[in-house]
Image (cartoon, rainbow, N blue to C red; front, side):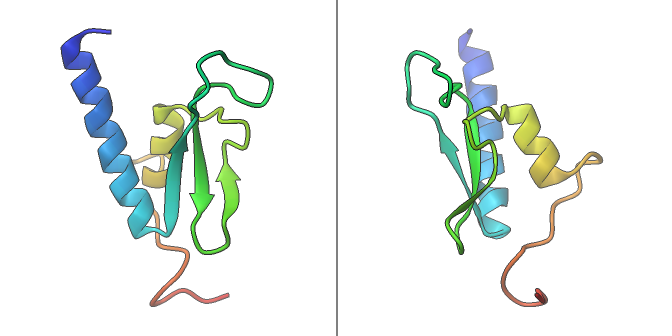
Length: 88
């Protein structure tokens, strides 16, 4: 991976982390060096209010997958699941 690619990836991840936090989620990166059956080296999306896994339970989400979940297919931002305007 080249320096420019790394910066782009870090920028995408920072933008996704910010968007996830606004919507009540957290993004966790798998820290395992060698992929295993339940640790595939990707990302996990967690609902911070219930501490439950929303997607990527095996750390199998990519940045592109996170973008689809958080920004939607057209790049629209998701509506927060908690807070003002949220009803059960």
